[in-house]
Length: 466
Image 1 (cartoon, rainbow, N blue to C red):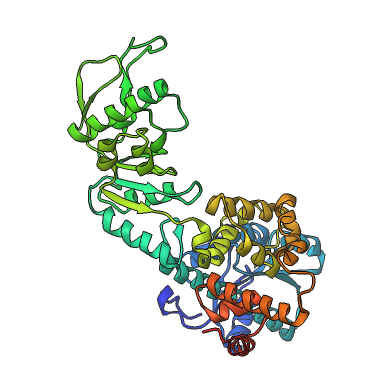
Image 2 (cartoon, one colour; image 1 turned 45 degrees about the vertical axis):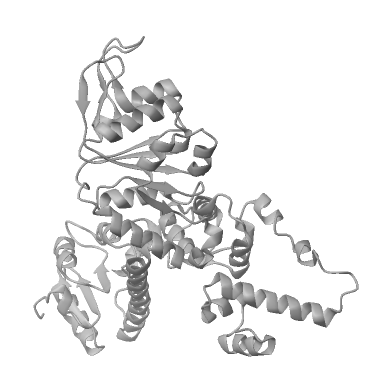
């Protein structure tokens, strides 16, 4: 057969044929080439895997019974490399049980020897078409991720794009950063993105939650302690300041830091030196500080709960993360991201493709007090419970569903309101809301409303909506 070409030179869909009987590979290769495919051949499982490692393949046709590595083992190895790559098994009549086993392990289909060419090419056409869609979805997802995310942060909204721009600008600098935002908005992800896009990325990223430890424990955690400094200090211990040497120290929930520790932190930021608990020797440190809080530190300063001088030391560069309810245009991207993230936790082998329209409507109406973290938990739970390929309202928590019973639709509508006028007002409000929540993208708004784009255009004119 023709020599292998590099990955980026392959322009047609490629079928790899694996059989220890050379006559079968020659015959099948000729059939595939007549159908317009590029045919590659291998006479063992080992050589098939070697070909897969250096060539793009769209379908594998493999015999079931082969010496050294049989078809089932080859199938398992292929699926570890690419779970979506279709594999058609060839088997003799006496090994149909093995073929069923192969189907259970992810084979696309199986054909029994001898077979007619028409049946084979029909199977091949369907399998290759399916994989073509998989590859296109991968390409689109990579395009979306490259355009809309920054590390593990995702968003196409103006709110999130401003955050990405600020991260890019501040990452190369060495300035202290203060991140503010409600719980669940992703402040830790912003801190990690800054670190791993900075010149310090090869050095440690050390995170401390200031709200998780009592004051005495937190002091020892940050500064470390000398042997014998207190009961239980049986050896010298380095603190987080030292562990972050050359890298980044992330102090989460900085607003919970007790005032005595605020004064000590201020000195470290000013002088880059400190003493361990129970020690007298000064230790020099070199780290970048990123702090985060879900509180209003300005108000805490006014209330004399947070030192003003420390606040200005921390707030050299300020990044504010918006709550999810303020950038609902990103909801679809986030849903798709979490569906992909939790795909491996599915109890069912059937992949989830998305959420039904009613679920999407409920999500757009929800206030999201827990922000992106709440959405992630919702999707993660639904991915475990969902029996089919679409997340339904029934897959959401009962208390969440109860919040959105149909009775809320009548709230605020007078009992004597004219039906036609009420329906017109509801329709107009729903259209405005859909446009607002999809960033005025009409195709997305039409999909959310369950109507065509032309139908939406007519309704926009009818209601005078610009």
